[in-house]
Length: 294
Image 1 (cartoon, rainbow, N blue to C red):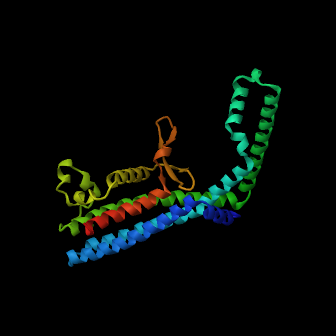
Image 2: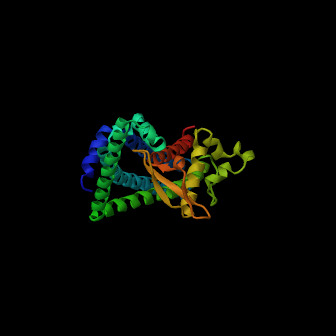
Image 3: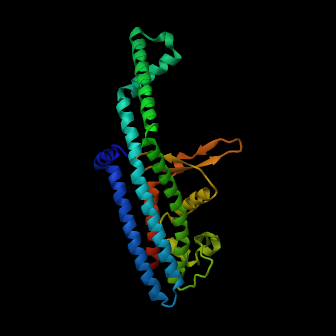
């Protein structure tokens, strides 16, 4: 990535939001690992003869943390490409051309061209000339990108980014079922083969008596997060396409829906972004912690 490392370092140094997000991710990653290890010890203390549940939790935790790491690395590789494009756009488009005054003047030129004064008409003409030059420069830049490995490398990193975020949803969903079984074991019950976090929400009448539901009451926001995450996983499982969503630096994927007439749609307010990976680490750790530290 030509020049991207420099841009990344500059943006990372001065973009406090990105720095805070990354630090929060590492803290959540570390905390989940530590809580999961404490939970494994609690499983052995509660039922020394039970091997299946701790084994499955350890395996799923390793996959979960590994998937989170892969998603973070893909985020770190892909973000500089977007920053590079943004940097180029900032160079090409001055703030003066996007001021409210200019926007109003352009609107007037479109709706009331005969009402423009000579000075206003001159300003509009100059703005249109600059806009044309910018568009031609951007087209030339994109043409050069496609004629080199620059564009191919960017597309490869974009695909890696999308795939890693989609994969994380599967590992995250799988872990919740193993957390369900683990909480049952810690509460003195035999998990059995039907391990699904859905069971904790399956019947309103059972929630008060369900041991896992009782634990979840101590984890604020978990039900809302769980059903949203599960819905995203189901969309990916059903073959949903993906698009890149912002804002910077909290980029992520938006899962696309398609209508019967072939129109694509993406809900930009309901994407799965880098910050959601951190939230997934936190919620998973919070449930385990609530089961061993009442």
